[in-house]
Image (cartoon, rainbow, N blue to C red):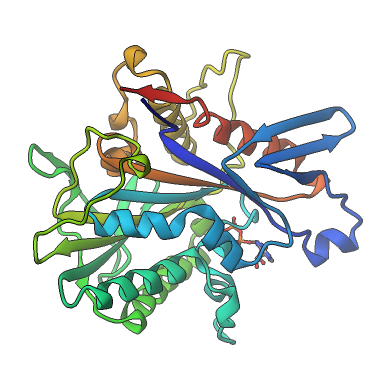
Length: 354
Ligand code: ADP
Ligand code: MG
């Protein structure tokens, strides 16, 4: 019997920013060790469990090493669909965790110590690729979902919405999506910067656009040699899943969650007109359904949003997911913090598989 959550949830609590410290915000979120996050404020006192928790002092390297990211890269090389997504309210550290501060300031290059999960994963992937000879063919695509429209962040020229299609062989896919081959760390980092730049440029025009869009960078890994290494079963959440010759490693910087609201104590979801909310709610819904014991599985509503359609393969089937809950420690962010922690806790229910 193997027991595993459908998605491995980890939490990262960022330090208080200078502004928060200056205006006297209190730290209301602390790590208790052993995967527990504790929130203590006037009328709230709650503890949430995670697979791992990184407190304000944790370095980017510590997050990379402690999150299981390295194993995820290896599984992607072995043909699995691996996804890491960062979620939380705007300003909670999603982009910092994924890319480091370099995505924010163009004037000075970030120190290598501050590089995020993405650059570290790329380095790990290329190292592995080199050690396997030229067996792996690597390519990248970079998309953004804004207002339920998909945009290619790598293709030059004016942004245009790309259609999302479904086929029996490919599942959901984006038509005419650009996929760029790369062989070096410099090349993939430069693709990441180009795409993020495009996302940011339109952020100026569209008022806080970047925090209202989901950005998905996917690395496609094709094994030219066709052989697969043998993976210990304990590392595979779904033993029935069969690795294909093409693995993927997808990094998702989700839109800020600050307007997601739930109504009702039973967790019934309100229908939000807002498309960010709709997709974040759809994602949360799929994850909580996937987290139920298998016998109780109902239909998983991937079709409810473009985001869940794009992530369908990684969430279900042979997918392996790492959820990074990004959290601000400030007393002023309390209600959003609680909502992020509740959102993450949906993945905690444990699934037992034969
Ligand atoms: P988000 O992408 O969730 O909106 P950001 O990643 O842009 O948030 O982070 C907001 C601010 O906090 C940025 O100035 C970022 O540099 C800073 N920050 C976030 N996480 C950390 C951290 N772990 N350590 C230091 N600074 C951080
Ligand atoms: Mg961001």
